[in-house]
Length: 105
Length: 165
Image 1 (cartoon, rainbow over the protein chains, first blue to last red):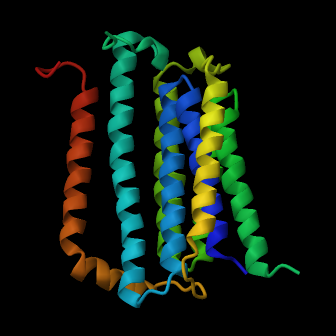
Image 2 (image 1 turned 45 degrees about the vertical axis):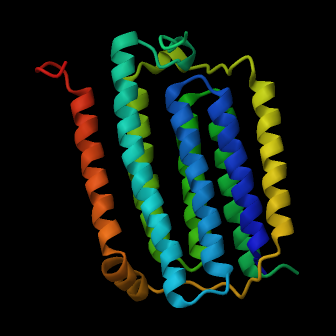
């Protein structure tokens, strides 16, 4: 049988891999993809609790609606981030985040 | 003997984790985009196993379709020759240690909570739609406004020429 713990461990692993990608990668596009992985880890956690907890129908539906909102906001975030990356590329001819240090004091 | 649902779950989890590791570790950036696609399809499989058919459909459409295509387009528009052979930060061991510590903390927290669980059950299309468009209609409209603003903002950001430059 699938238990809630299975989904929690899968979500934890996915989140950690995404975290590693955010910290270790140097291309802005790859950092963005790692952030998408972390958002999906959150979604797996949410669907796990929505399916396994002792909830009534309305609360279960709310769990799924929260995931719909997470996906919506992730899409909006992705569109904006891609626009910013294209803008940065046009200004600096690179998407290497190591070079983007003009705010460094 | 593992139950069929557990075997399916392990297949989906292998797809998710394999795709995620591909995104985090591969040296070729286009392979990374396709690994992301594999991970997203695995998450859709997990949704299906939790009886969330609508979410699985949305996941395949939004992530499998839109997000991966947009990422591939951005790879094409930002000259990917820079990153044909990706290199990681010099501080990647630190990142690996941090990620491992976070993983251990999350697993320890998950296993010690001891939440009372029941047999898994989903929500039908009908109940989900009714809840979304009656009780949660206002947040839904706000979310659509957020999407609209974000899309207009991204168009303004990437526009060339004109006064806004």
